[in-house]
Image (cartoon, rainbow over all chains, first blue to last red; front, top):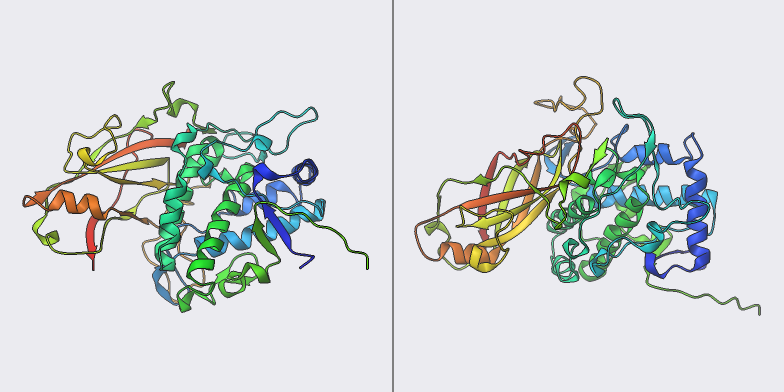
Length: 255
Length: 165
């Protein structure tokens, strides 16, 4: 569909796509209201802590359930639309850490007038004043291997998938280190959204193999706060207006 | 606030925290046919530092320097994405002991976590001979804040080894 957003590999973006993303992120970082970087990053960790990790109990549910994958899908979807409010040509790229080459160049390189993909603003926390995010990445060889993801994609059970992919996710947060390494400040770093697009993509790839609706039935009506969505609403990315691709070209046909 | 550069040295080695060595577990229970076996870590704390936990079987002397191979009983690892300490006001990170009926909110974000290492072959090797085996957990701290204890990071209620047909 023409309006479908294509999320691309961060290393395969065109110059125009990188420029659109930097433009949108840069504008969000300058906005102090609920369209801005501080607001949207603050949903995940400090100060709102709405993020979902690990199993938790819920309404009329004493057995823990884990909304890690659907919650972050809803978060990225809402965040991506907020990004496109600032620049309609921007979309969320995914960071394929299985290439074991480290952070994508576009997220680390110096740019003459500043690179909003390098760091994001962090609000005052505790006794620390407002500042920009920092990273302390480990050696690329310690990033997850493609063979590990292949093992995970073969798991037939959603809860098994969730536990194993969340574990890989945890390790990549620690690998980036610095602010990305802890829940409180991780979403203020722009690489957070590329990392989570990769996690969401792995769930998408798993769904292609194991079934889009392969999830325990009691998950379906669990709500994903504060996005106004239920789990059943986010199962199929085709209904969410985006897809994942390594590359794409479009030609207009005027007839 | 966040820190990390001091957690990895010039040879790309992460800071090793306090190592856990289990008591002897019964190996004979696992001496039968199974298709999959896991090491489960129940109620793992994730309120402070982030770390990778290397898991070794029958290797009570394992450290961060130990090669992660079959010969050394390496079973795999799990990662903890820590909250980085508490930045709320007093009581913010205290997990309530119980939930009220009809409370629509999910339980506290710091509810303890379950971690599972799928380690079928390693468990088979560790239990096929002998009556007992041990589990060693070597934590490597990857990220922390000034609020975190980086010397003692691995805390969990119990470990269970489970086999499935």
